[in-house]
Structures are given as structure tokens and as C-alpha cells.
Image (tube, rainbow, N blue to C red; front, side, top):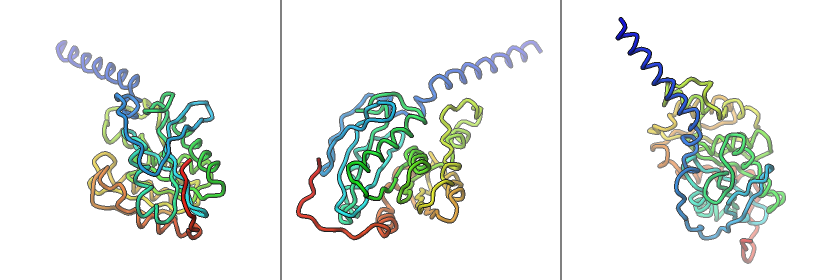
Length: 276
């Protein structure tokens, strides 16, 4: 009996220590890209590096390409382990370039090139700063919010607070609490500091929502994206495709451009597009 009691106490102690370590380091797990050794990535052709200033005075690295006259801007938010460069390159390629879209791709606070430390509140401020910068640099241009994984949660939170043309979401989740529960079922929900309740926030919007989700996604299972689509209601289109968490990126770009570009005026040709 004493042996069993001792074993039980040892298990409880180990569990408590593990929870304490998780509580202390949880943002390192949620935002791994902010804590890795930074690797310089080349600036994609056609975009220019700029600096965004957030409401709390953080300085964010971002990439910018202005839209053609009368066209919109894709403000795109990367995943928790990614960077803005791949998204900037993608949205300056086809079909977006031919349709005249601009792009603004920021790096979250704490990520390479940006100051500060990541948190849910902080990333939302970063997203709002990105939208404000796009509106300032392209006055009157409609803004399409795009996000992958964690970036989808940022896009949804921004759309709750500012008007947007719509939401283009790839591998989104309904809440971070749900994601953690699936991957770490023994972790109590109250321990999580950044919950990203996208299922609540997405109800506030009015624009169309396109959700693209990989059927073989082991990071964000399809049922989480489907729950988010149901929370969005009739304005959401849920599009499950073959692929995993990353391989789906861009596979529905032509459909997305057709959906959201139809709400924007036709391209007005100009002699040369200059990136400031």
C-alpha cells in the first residue's frame, strides 16, 4: 500500500512539474518561429521591405506591393512557424498579379525582423497595424484578409474589429483551446493564456469566408475547420481538399481570386507599377 501511495504521489509530482514547465514555456510552443535562430530569407521579387509601427510602439518587418488602380490588397498572416516571405511571393504571383492585387505581409512581433514578444493580444495589434498601413498606402483599396493556421486566427480577430472584403482561411481552427485539447488531452484548459476563440469572433463579420482545409492535416484536423465554418454560418464556404497542413497552400488561389475579386472593380492599366 505504501508503495502504491508513493508511486501515486510521484506521478502527481511529475504531472505538476510538467504543467508548471508548460505554463512557463507555453508561448515557446505556440510561437516557435519567434524563438528559433533567425535565418535570412531573400526579399521576393516585386515587393519592398517596410516597417510597421503598432499601437504599442513595436516595429514590425513587413513586405509590401501596391495594388493596381482600383484593385484590392491582400493582407496575409503567416503560420506560427513561418515567415512573411513565402506569402508575399505567392500573392505577387498568379492569379493575383494579373488581377492587379497588392499585398502586405507582416512578421509578427518577436519574429525575425520585428521587435517585441508574441502573444494573442500582441498579434491582433500587429494585424490591425498591417490593415492600417495598407489603408494608408492604398487609400480606398478593398482589403482581403488571408491567414494560414495561426494566421487565420489573427485574420479573424482583425476582421472582428475593422471592415474587410472577406476572409480567405487555410487550415484554420475554431479555438486554440480545442487544438491543445486534441494534442495534449491531459493539459487543463485554464492553463492556456492565448485561446484564440475564432469560433466566437467569426460571427461578427459580414463578408464572404472561404475555408480551405486538408483532409490529411494532422496539425489542425478537418473537424476544427468545419466547426469554424459552422460558426460563420451561411456566408462561409468550406472546401476540403487533398493534402496536409502545408501542402494545401495556394491550391484554391484561382477560386479565391474569382470569389473575392468579383467584388472589386476591373483592373485599370498603368504604364509601370512602382514599389516604394
